Image (cartoon, rainbow over all chains, first blue to last red; front, side, top):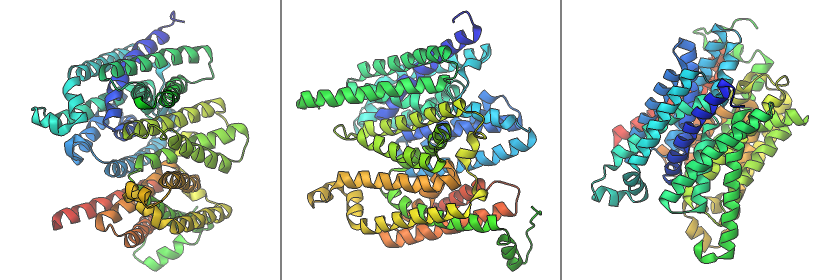
Length: 276
Length: 282
């Protein structure tokens, strides 16, 4: 199957998207910011529609939309994190704008809006071109490296912000930077797995890692490994079964890993109560 | 449909609004939805469960597509998917119970639902129009039967909340104290999630998954900016919800733009207005 260009592109881009989602996702789950990731992914969808409407390249529209909203969310709350309610209200409104844009798009390009919307929502990793692939690899690679480099201060700031402040860590700046990095990942992964399913790649492998171990570096590696594994296996699975969309296969596998990890933890917790 | 036009004569405009049966149905359904979402959402915002509420709202997508694939009535799909998601979110909280894994669980449940919905959709492409209708709803295609069943669910939900209001309030604000007083907190948690799921399933058939969330979160959050007193807050929340829905439906009627845009925009504007007013006063 690797004889095809589109498969190689999908694997290359998918690997880096999964790496970025796995590493950043571990911190997202630790900081209980999954809802912020969810909001960003919906915003990405609106950005894609807006780009289609005004005729800008889709990756640009995605990136601008997610970065603006990430900055907005960081500005709304203390510590560079907004609370659930303000996130919910804001992104409900942005989705309302999305509804308006879809209506406008449907009027301007009879029929094209359905395909554009479906692709933005659920991704089309097997239709990535060479240029999109390079962009995804570079953007996600840079974000993953940045997260790894600033992992220690981020970890401290997430676990104990007072202690981090006392040690001279710039907690607020880190929080803002982290949300912006999340925005970049969202924009890039929207092309691969789609805006709505990106959440699974952020939450499921990281959640599984958190269920299995509390040790930071082991967890981080586990999370990234599970994300990449789900991506590879999911791509292969959907290549073999044509009626199975790649996004569904990838998310299904990642969620299965999470379910197994939760079961394993519960089983272990019963067998040895003191470790729970 | 003849082209409706807005005129300075408000009475004439109102008569115009009520002149079509589909519009009357939409207004009736919108009124019930506004009240139901405002009351259930008030507890949701108080309990900081906006993420769970949004996840339940999204479940209408796999529910509708799955039911279409299996040849079941769509209504059944909505209820099954929402109740299933509520149980899945709840089930994983037992034993582990930490805040960290809780959000990961909710996120995973939502992603699985969407992935399943997308799979169902691609398995029977020709049955449904596309994902947008399911996500954004068709407010103006409501039937009389839907209005009646919505009314039934809304009454059941509001009565259920009224009966359980005291223990639920206590369990939401201070779970430890509630536990000490003998309130079955974990059962109440599950019960509330199921009720939220039922309310969302009933509403999203009409409003679409995305709009129901706006109505669940915005009016109660605005009310809680003004007062934290339960009954007054809930009443305010209902008033806000009604105003937003009525204005939204009327604006959509007199303009070529979709109702979802107007309802979410009015909801957001009201919240920002109240937030700014509070900030100026303090």
